[in-house]
Every structure is written in structure tokens, then in C-alpha cells.
Amino acid sequence: RNCPEYLRDTPDSGYVESRALLERWHGCGRLGYAITPRFAPTSTPEQLARTGELAREYPDAYIHTHLAENKAEVAWVAELFPESRSYLDVYDRAGLVTGRSVFAHGVQLNERERHCLGRAGAALAFCPTSNLFLGSGLFDYEGARAAGIEVGLGTDVGGGTSFSMLRTLDEGYKVLQLRGQTLDPLRAFYLATRGGARALGLDARVGSFEPGREADFLVLDPAATPLLEARLAQADGIAEKLFALQVLGDDRVVAETWVAGECVHERAAH
Image (cartoon, rainbow, N blue to C red; front, side, top):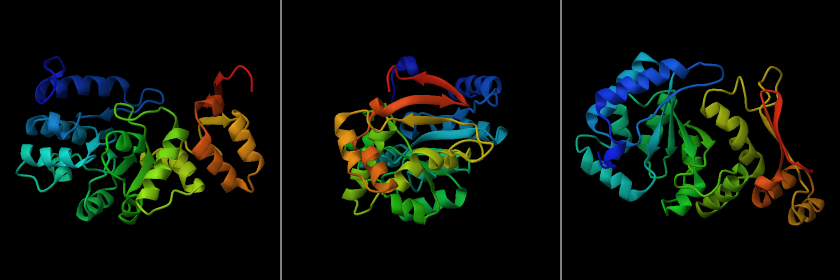
């Protein structure tokens, strides 16, 4: 509901088609399947119930959807689901708040909802470029962490403005400054690497350089732009160097991309 006719399905067709995709692709090589209702406003209660049924049948699959990005969205959900206590409760009633759930945004959550996410072991994807572009509000990183929620970094390029994790970190820094919080460079690069892996339950496989990991990483060129090269020449210590990359870096900084130990992209000259 509340979407173009050509995008609509039914609770049954959504269940059947998602199940077929899940059985085909989940665990195929490095792939993991995410059961993904678009979000509550475009889902009927029956559709969410069938989605929860699928999640119970395949408990190792991911669950992903959007949650409480802006105030108008939260108010709309309250109108569409008057029986639910909150936006999060809509998903919780359907059995979609679990340790395999990754919710995008979570900007407009209250303390009770954050604690519910923390108890369930669910994760939040902090998507600062989307939140700023849409004027949705300022993510409460410290509140999320205090509730025991794993937080990763997301771009949400449907509403966001860049694929680059470095640009996303730059905007994340500004969001938390406006919140009266700080995204220091060590924490920032953690969110873009191991933090994201932990949010997905993949930190035993990726996200760090520990022995046995699958060697997904980028090689960054600190002299990729004249401004960055000049700033890094004055940097003292690793934290200051990372901060310069965080606020001045973009896709031009990426010299090489490695996936599972293989170099899959190399900039022509670096």
C-alpha cells in the first residue's frame, strides 16, 4: 500500500517470491539474504506478519528495513497502525526485531525503543547523508550505544548523497557535533570497518586485519588531492591523519580495492 501500483505485491506473493530468493541465494558463497519489507508505511499488517513468518522459518537470514527516520514518518506510522505503541512496536509485533535485524536510521527513537533494540541484539545503520539531505534530524549515537545497540555506518543512497564511506564519515562527524557528541577519527573508522561487520554479525570473517579474516580492504592514497597532501604533511600522529582523511577524503583517495584477498580495482596511477 501507499506505493506505485507497479511495485505492489500481496502478502502471499511477497512471501513466496522472497522465500524462493532466500533458498536460492542465502549462504551461496559469501552471500547472505536479507528479508526486506520496504518499511511500515508501505506494508500492510498482513504483509508484515508473513514477513515475520519467513524470518522465523529462516532464523539465520537477515531482517532489514527502515525505522523512525523523521517525525512525519513516525506520525504516519502511528495513523496506519493505531494498535501499536510505537513505530518499533509495529515490527516487534510481527516478529521482526531480533538479533539478525538491521534497521536503517533510528533517528526519532525514544529511550524505551532503544532499550528494546538493545535487548533484542538488533543493530542500527547510521545514515548521516540521508538524514541531513531529508532534514530528518540528528542521530543519537551515544544514546544508541548506551542502550547496547551495535551501530554501523550506512549511505542509504536512496535518500543519501554519496556512496563514499569517507564522505559519509565527514557528514556523520557534523551530525554528532550538532548533537553535542563527538565522532573522533578512531571511532569513525571503526564504524566504517569492524563496527559495520559487528552490526551484521560478520566480525569473525571481515572488518579487521586479524589472522583468518577474508581480506576485504581498501588502500587509501594520502596524497590523492593537493589539499589532503598538504594537510597530512602537518598531521601529528595516526588520529590526526585519520581525521584529515575523514573530513577531506572522497573516492579519489581509493587507490586499490581488495575483495577476499584479490585486488579487484586499481587506480591507473597512484
